[in-house]
Length: 242
Length: 242
DNA sequence: TGTCAAAAGTCTGGAAACAGACCATTGAAG
DNA sequence: CTTCAATGGTCTGTTTCCAGACTTTTGACA
Image: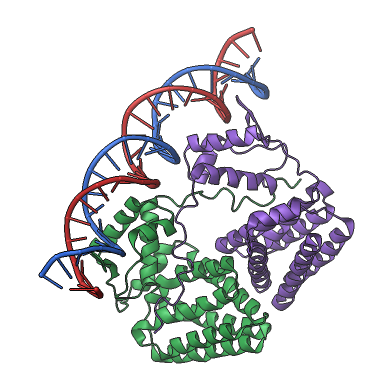
C-alpha cells in the first residue's frame, strides 16, 4: 500500500557531477571567489592539488589553464612558482543579482536559503551545547574579531570564515561540509550586492550575539541568533531583488 | 595574519567519488537496503536508470551484474522483465554493529550522528514554521500511520520514509538530500541492531510528538521532539556497542 | 655566480566511460 | 498461435581521463 515510500528523492540522483574538467573549474573558481585562497596567494602545487581533488594532473592543468585565460590565475614556473590568484571581487553592478538568481533556476533561491538556515542553525546550536576548549573559544573570538576589523574588500571572505568556523568547531566534517556547501550556494548572490556600512554594523551586532550565546553554552539562544542573522541576510537579498 | 581562514575544509575534497562503477554499486545497494525499492519490486529499466544516474548503460549494467552475483537482484529478460530485488534484511547478528562502526572509521560515528541531529532537527523546525497544505498534513499523517502499522520486517524502511518525508515536505531539495544522506550513513548501524518491541513503542510515542508539534505549528517543540528522538536512537546504538 | 630543489610543462600508452546501433528474449493481448 | 512492444544482452568506435616518466624554468642560497 505504500510502495516506494521515500519518493526516491536522493537515490536516483546523478552519480557523477558531469564532466571532471568542468567540475574542477567550478571548484577552483569557488575557492577563489570565496577567498579560501586569497588574492596574491597561490594554489597548492599541481601534483598535490590533483591528489586532493582526486583527479589526474592533466585534468587539473586544463582547469588551471582555463582559469588563467579567464584572468583569475597567474601561473609562474620554476621554484617558488605556482598558480597565483589574481582576482579582486568586482564592485557589484545593477543586474548582477538578478542574473545570479536566474542562474540558480526556479526555486533555487528559496532552496538554498532554507538549506542554509537549517544547517547553520543546527551547527550553532550543537556547538553551544558542547564543552568548548580554550583553543576553540579563542578561534571563535579571533574569527569574530577578523570580521569586525575587515576592510570592505575583505569583508565577505572573513564573514565566510566566521560562519564556517562555527560549523568546523562542532568537530563534524559532514556538518562543516554541508555548511560550506550552503554558503557556496549563496556566495554569488552576496557578491552581487554592495557591502554597505549599516548592514555591516547590523551584522556585527548579530555576530556578537551568536558568539556570546555559544560561549555561554546557550543552545536555544545561539540557534535563535543565527536564525535572526540569516533572516536578515535573506531579507536584504529580497530587498535588492525588488 | 589570517590567511587561508576557512581551513579549506571543503574545497580540496575530491571532485569525483572515485570509480563510477563502484559508486553505482554502492548507490543501488543503498536503495535496496534502505527499501526505496522493496523486495519483489524491480529497478527502473536500464536505459531510464542510467539516464537518472548520469552514467552510461554499460557502467550501470556492470553494477547490476555485480549485485546479481552477490544475490541482491534477480535479472529477467523480455517484456515485463527487469532487475528484481531479491533481498531480505537478515536478522542482525552479534558483532554486526561493531563491524559496521569499524567500517565508518575513527570519528565517523559521532560525525554521522551529529550531522543527522543538525539536519533533521533543522528540517522539522522549518516545516513546523511553515503553513501546511491539507495535502502535506495528510502525507505526514499517512507516513506516521505507516510506521505504526509496520510489520517488524518493514519497520526500518517505513521509519526511514517517515523521517525523510519531513525533510521533503519542507520543499527544499537540498535539505531533503542532506537528510537522506544523513540517514544513509546510519542505516547500516540501525540494520545491525534488532528491532525490539519496547523500542518501537517508545519511538512511536516520539514520532507522534514530532507530528503533533509540526501540525500545531510549534517549531521549538518540533525541534525538541526530533532531538529527543534522535538522542534516543543514538543512546540505543551506544548501548549496543557496550 | 653557480648550484639545485621545487615547481610548471610535455609526452605516451592505456584504462575507463560513453554513445549509439543492433540483437535476443519474453509474455500479454489479440 | 501469432504478434509485438518492452526489456535485457551485445558489439564497435570514440572520448575522456589517468598514471607516470621525462624536460624545462626559476630564484633563493651557499
